[in-house]
Amino acid sequence: MTRILMVCLGNICRSPLAHGIMQSKLPTEHFLVDSAGTAAYHVGNAPDRRSITVAKKHNIDISSQSARQFTVLDFDAFDYIYAMDQSNYANIINLSRNNDDIAKVKLFLDANENIQNKNMPDPYYGDQSDFEYVHQLINETCDILIKSFNHKT
Ligand code: 4NP
Image (cartoon, rainbow, N blue to C red):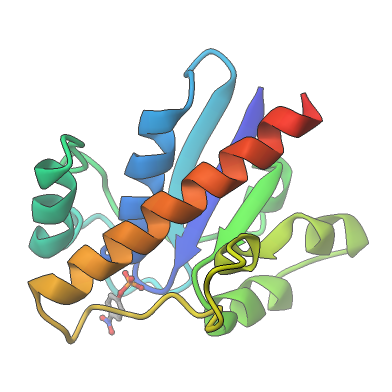
C-alpha cells in the first residue's frame, strides 16, 4: 500500500481537490490518499463550495471530506507528503523529527516541469476561475506523479 497525503493551509480549497483528484486516478487496493491543513481554522468543515463545484464538474465528489490539521503522526502514516506551496512545506518541515520525516515531504509542483512557479496559487480570496486553474494544475501534476509511481513499482 502506498500512502499519499496532500497538504495545504486550511484543507478546504487546494488539498481537498488534490486528494479527490489523485484518489480518482488510483486503485484503492494499492493506494491510500488523504489530505490535511497546516492550520486549524477550518477543522471539521467540508471543502469550500467552489472546490466542490469544480470537482463535481469533472465528475469527482469531494463533498463528504472533512478538514483536519496535519500532525506529527502523519509522518508515520504516510509515504509521500505533498505540500501545495513553500509556506505549507516549511510548516510541515518544522514538525519533522528526523531525516526520514523530511525525506517524505515534497513540494507538489516540483513534479511538474511545465510550471515555473512551484507555489500552487491559493484560490481562497479568488473566484471560480481561480479554482478552475488550480484544478487543471493539480490534474496535470497528478498524472505526472502517477507515471513516476508506476516507474517505481
Ligand atoms: P487552502 O486555502 O489552504 O487551499 O485550503 C485557504 C483556506 C482558508 C484560508 C486560507 C487559505 N484562510 O485564511 O482561512
